[in-house]
Length: 296
Figure 1 (cartoon, rainbow, N blue to C red):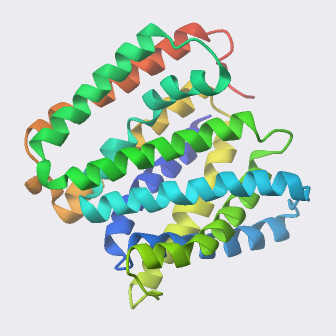
Figure 2: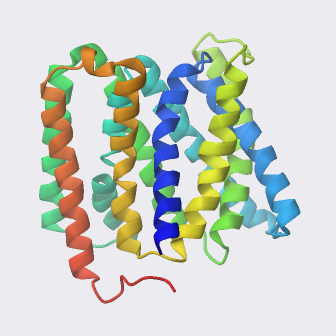
């Protein structure tokens, strides 16, 4: 159990580190994500080949998984766009709203009644975003993009539950990232046209940061995360995942001194969002207390 918790925290810490790497890499957000997915797809196929875990899927299922992977690519593009237009702290704060957005959006997809308590918590988190927005207007575009990024990742999560079934998380990850890379590749000419961008190649340290981002913060975190799922409870996993923006913001403060560019109201807004997320987690564990047990 202890080693599984350590692996889980390392995975979440590395996920938090992706924002810092996104700011270090000089490529624009579109080509940053393209190169990340390109390296990740190659690394995953090598890993799955030598571990003997490649499983064939039907063309129909691949197209479904690939379409969700393309939305995932859009999430990453928006996330790094938020960093480029604002900073790491703002992007991660917007990403922290995903749990509450999910509580509102999932009932719409699955035709369930929206819980009033969850709606109130969503309003609580929205208040945090409003405080951050009006106290950091210089980052307004980054906040808009960051919230779209949060929405995209919620849609990916919901579609994974609604459409993808019968495959292991490993298989879904392999084909989702591969399909996402292919989908993004098809969309890149449109991206270049709309943003007046040319093909960009990594320069100097970009290669190092991209390799760390793809191999450590994507492939390694996937391996650590899947391994931890077999040993710790669902509640522990979800609670630990809420630390991702916290780790990321602390790293951004340490590496880029972003705290110098944020108003004091940022911390109030972020605290409201974090409290809302933790209260939502508490509600979930109380409602599912009997089902949330360690996987032995």
